[in-house]
Length: 338
Image (cartoon, rainbow, N blue to C red; front, side, top):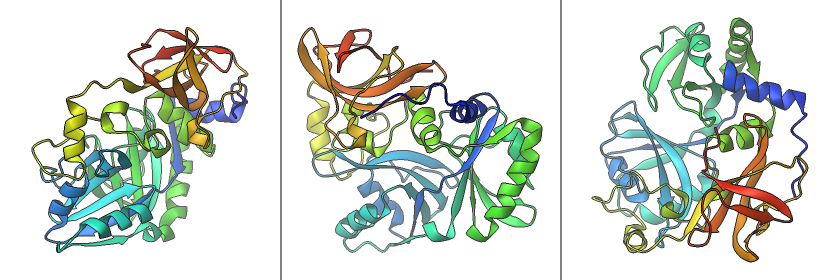
């Protein structure tokens, strides 16, 4: 069940607004799998739907990992650090390692969990570049989106990725050894004062509100869906072989009536079950007929409304339709709210 308790929460709003208007930073380490070996590229191209072989050194790519039925098992970011060295960023590393074990065959490849030796700080917002330039040895003015570079804070080696899970045009990640996290936090705190930086500590803000406002997913939104159903078919490497390709090719030529859409509810205090919290999700009702289920619900501080995702039958409803969710009026929208 969900009840809106966020609208008047001063701390959450302050942290949200810092990311949108100045800069917010937080420690939130994804799990990292390091993949190496002469067959590393070939195995990753087999495991993941988007092409990996054409990824340049120092660049990153978002992609899905599918089962044989074409359904999403995980969504990840892959960094190519060198010709035969990659990092795969995930939240489900044990499941990923098991899937690698099942599918690696005779590939000459090694992979290991390096989460325990790598911490990550997200630095997000319009002033994030300015803040990082004030603490890094090398300026990042020309660093492109979805790229990763070696750098230093004082004499401490770090990797800087231009990316993030907030939807901000300017956002970065700092990868650093655990023994150096105090230095990083001190630098961000002290230097951040000049840029109105705020440390984001509210889980709901960093994981639910900020990403959802910009149409970003978690695996709880994607589990059991195929890329077409959730709008992630762009970039799939149709000219290569990958697990799930045969099933996905059949899905590709069929009508895709089931789709993920957004929705808003103007009323502040609402009670709606959501799939991402373990239930089947509240029914979406249109003209007396159930047409879908609620996947996610949170509060969007940018538009000052309850926002969420719903999985619906798009032969029966469309963006702009008013629907009933547990007795509350909602409007179906695009998945990007601001």
